[in-house]
Image (cartoon, rainbow, N blue to C red; front, side, top):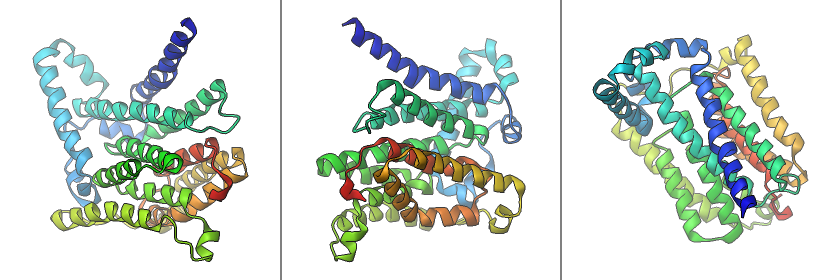
Length: 333
């Protein structure tokens, strides 16, 4: 009885408390060149409602309303602490932290659940599993040097989607597939990375050898997921047209000429290779398949993203951790 109680306490400490403390330190313990400007914003800036950011409806909605709520609470109930809070950053910055840390903790919980589903022999060891979980958490935290209002939310829904995919691979329950499609539908209102859940599903279920034999198993499921992504994606671009655009800019040349962007690219490559090197034969094949199906995303971040903002690689890094830790069947190669 005491042993079970100790395990629950330790789980709470390692899955919730320690990640929270790390996240808190990343927001209030030091400043990056990105954070300095954000700390001065009193409300959601206008650019969040223009260009490509306009399509990120859920994060923008949360930014506005959580900031309003925090401002109301501080002005009416915490006025004695207002001067102290403003020294640490604007109320908008504190609101961004609250939103991000909430979804970050949820991500930590779901990721821990994934690591216990069907772990490889090494990760089956509780101590090793906690270290793997902590490594994944460290990656998320360190990439918060570019804090945004959408990344942590998008990462949570992506990890949650991976959970439903793995559950579907084990039990083939239609409810898991429906759950995944709902996650993709909702997360498209957060960020375009929702499409990576389709890439993960394809990597798990599509067998290239079967395709050569004209065996198109799971194609219907993938089409179903693609529809769940396409409908809100197109709908948003039809509804939101004023002051909005598909991309913020084209950064292809800058990505391969700026030393900072080249360092960011190297970080992304080595981080994914880190998981690849720890994977068994099946896990390595899964990572390669996933990168193949993620090609559209990789091309887009090369064209319109900045490699120095390594947060763009975060879904790929977490996928590598999951691929290296999960015991896939050999017929998934």
